[in-house]
Image 1: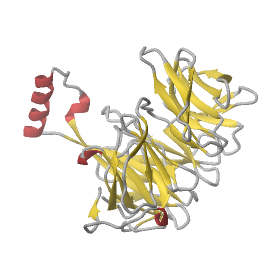
Image 2 (image 1 turned 120 degrees about the vertical axis):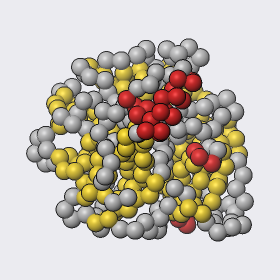
Image 3 (image 1 turned 90 degrees about the vertical axis):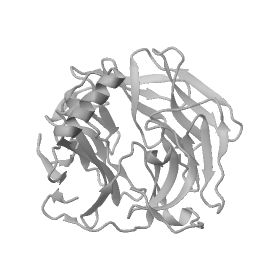
Image 4 (image 1 turned 90 degrees about the horizontal axis):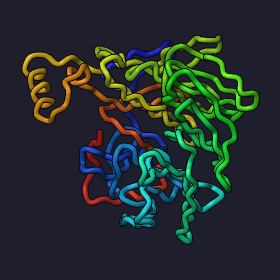
Length: 359
């Protein structure tokens, strides 16, 4: 895939770095795999959950936790990988964090009642769980602060920050006239950037909220405090210094990258532990015609699903690695919701067969 890049950026062939990626490899039957940053599959760890089932790595980089019909742990230093199910009852979605002051896992759980959701902590050593019912109208966890004692959530009216260190407490909340679809704590954690029909800056001390940009979703903060966001499903941009300004960094070429087709697959950039690299998911589409269009319409009719604008397109997904230091970028076909970066030396690579192309 040829990429359209901002001045100063260069597209290069996929290459290895000192890091690897842990990704749920959905086409292979929901398996958690390790691949290098050149997108070469190194080894399979074990079971993986669905697209919304998160992956977490502890502060040592040696132990991985995965939501997969319970919570599964892997020791990356072992040559022979085996699944160790540390909990059979909890199935977190959207959020799973290793608390460095633990050993604990911080997670988001759904209740039996569809209107209920919880934030929970699991003690890894003794298996005890503490669940706190979130206020009604709380939706999806968007970000966790550096000290892992506060979680940013979208809500029915806007967004809220909850203190989760001990008893659940609402720190602050804000109402917005739009649905919040993404958010992140700013570098100094005095501000939150929210996404909803553009980007909004929310001052946590004063409560003031200002519009930063009329466009964008899925904000993410790099190590230098730069604000990255999805301009649309196939275009990655960075917020400029002047109010409302931004620079398009990378865009898929030769594909429709607008979100009006209903195929919005955008995800926030996920940065490596040293913040030098970022992983972005970009999606573009091509219009179905002739036989392919007829087959898509027939499939929708067969399963009783309305034939919408979404079904009139074929979607092309790419995983892109950005080297922020050298301003280089490379990509390969693939898509994932959940990614964890690990140092290459953390994982044993003894395998029975040579690596295969993963994406």
